Length: 259
Ligand code: SAH
Image 1 (tube, rainbow, N blue to C red):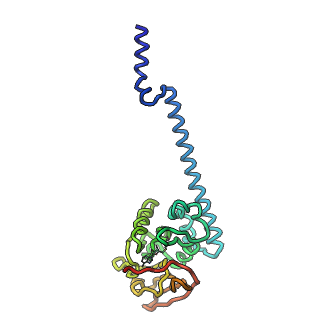
Image 2: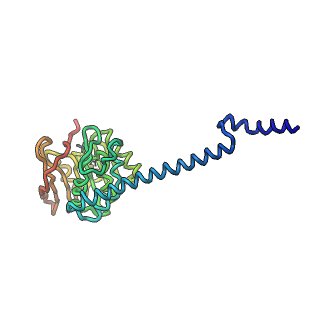
Image 3: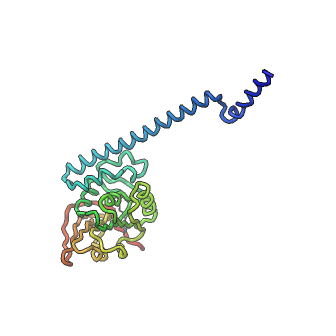
């Protein structure tokens, strides 16, 4: 009877042996180890985002505030957007460096200072409607979305438009409206805009964009030859009149046209 009972005990555990190759005690230990490891890995992940946050705040201090950008909302927006999630994975560690970075298809994400400069100069208020031409990675659109929930952005390269749209949703900027197409024509259905930002260098200011600028609105656009000097132009519409001012020499990827 006793012998039979022992056999019964072994039988009781044979299912566990089959499944895990472990006795219950060992199984408990293994589970505890898994829980501990999961804890360590998630702590490592938290460290990772803390590390990027620290780099981001340093970037805002040394590259942006120290160079004269002092609009608090612009500084807050750049401190908030996780730029490292908008660059290709292999470049994450350089995301907060003082320069542009490639984003594929021959395009680039602008230097953080330029993003801040172009954002500040548009004087965006919470209810403003803003159009960006040249979505690229979606980073600049996310910065704009920190300031208003009415952001419209257009990208001519279908793959970039697609990835940027998904990335903006994943990072919590789902209010941004992304459309694939030639931004030369603007976005008539959403016009007029309080502010327009163009992030590719055009040879001249596209007339449809001037038309879609609201009275009192501002546009910032790099103008010039793709192979020569370009100027960041501030365009304003006052009492129906357009004024332009050249702000600084810059270098942007070319504004392309749909065939
Ligand atoms: N603002 C982007 C960087 C833009 S790079 C960011 O934050 O990442 C310039 C982008 O403008 C490129 O992706 C390019 O494909 C796009 N572009 C060029 N000409 C365009 C046009 N006519 N309409 C819309 N997008 C255009």
